[in-house]
Image 1 (cartoon, rainbow, N blue to C red):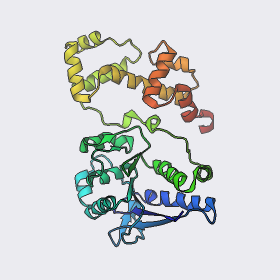
Image 2 (image 1 turned 30 degrees about the horizontal axis):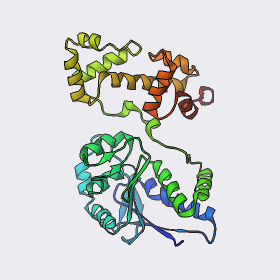
Image 3 (image 1 turned 180 degrees about the vertical axis):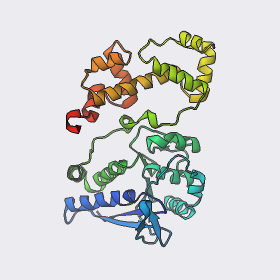
Amino acid sequence: MSALRVGVLAYPGCYASEVFGVPDLLTMAARIAGPGHSDYEVSVISPRRRVVSSGNVTLAVSPLRRVDVLVVPGFELVTGTDLDTRLAALGPEIAAIRAGAAAGTAIVSICVGAFLLGHAGLLTGRQATTAWLFADELARRHPQADVRSDRLVLTDGGITTTAAFSAMYDFALDLIARHSGREVARTTARVALIDDARMSQTPYVDARLLPRPGNTFSRKVMRHLEQHLTARYDLAGLANTFHVSTRTLLRRFANETGSTPLEHLQSARVRRARHLLETTDRTVTSVCAAVGYRDPGTFAALFAKHTGQRPGDYRATFHRDRSRID
């Protein structure tokens, strides 16, 4: 098998670690595979002569060239970022992405690099993912895309998108498995201390970081539900508390949040349960009762629906040993 040509598209402000993360893992895989096995021809390319990445790091770049796989790294996206202006300034890169796709190149975005692919028109009619923190914004900007916020890596019609930051390794391991074989990918993961069995980014979602309504009707309802986390859900009683009908309560809450008060209560309970599973040694049954559930089976099913893992499996992955920390 001939060398796979992989190009990483560097641009101003891109994450330097996402420029080099995939190439470094491919280099490691090539060494593990040994002489005579399929290799990788990796280059950092750009339509610009000079690129300064995150951290004010100047990158050595090569001119655009034909590659088999074009990797588009992400960039720092924080509150207050004018995303329209940011993307408009990347016209040469957007054009290169669009041209690569038209030529049959496999296009891959890392993290919020998906916004560049969307701006290039490559997400229309396709399933896509990105960092869970920005999935709603990607879906809002590209309503013709089917954004799957739970997925780590998603390929649809030659276009691959990944979740945040470390998901670049999930993509790279899959690429290695397809080009060099599963055993090479497995060994590379072991040597690099990378979890090659992750299936979803859902367990990593921290709802506290997601945008929430301001001082609105739904925000007041949310606060009330969170203050009475273990109380039995009573829609009529909740509506009476806010002096509206149940129909008005549901309509106003849905208009402001896109969900229901019950769904928010369940999410809040799961969030509290996650904290207890991570930071205490309480039994799953005790945690179940602490967040308002009497039936551990019902609680476990709800927890798995929200996190992608059963409570016991979640604890095994995320529990923090206080004795070791202290």
